[in-house]
Image (cartoon, rainbow, N blue to C red; front, side, top):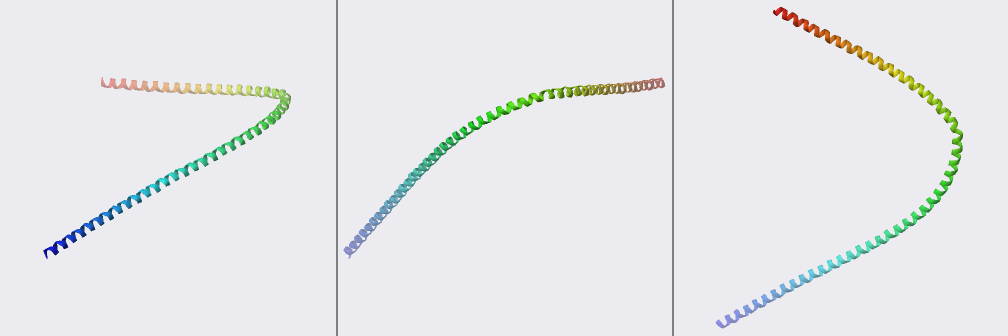
Length: 177
């Protein structure tokens, strides 16, 4: 029976070792699988980043091309606009020259009439200024006379007040004496 027990014990030990080995293999396979999955995810993320970067670069290139085309179009439009402006400026200069000649003729015709009107207006202004000046001087004289009268009245009132105070003081001293 002892031999049977030893054999059974040995068999159980072998099964335990086999079980431990199987578990170790399964764990190793699970770790390897997990690492493979992580590596696959990392490669996919890297590929997505590269793809995103390339797409961004492509979009930037498209935008740069559009910007260059827009700038070229604007430069062309500006050149056309400048040409039109130069033509318009030349026409305007001719019209302005003609208008200036006509204006000069009209101005010469009006000049004498204006000079006569200006002389008359100046004479009226001088007369009005003289009248205003005389009114102002008269008003200043009146104001000065009024101020002098008020100052004289104030001085007289002060003198009377001082005299009254002196008289009161004198009477008080007499009473004390």
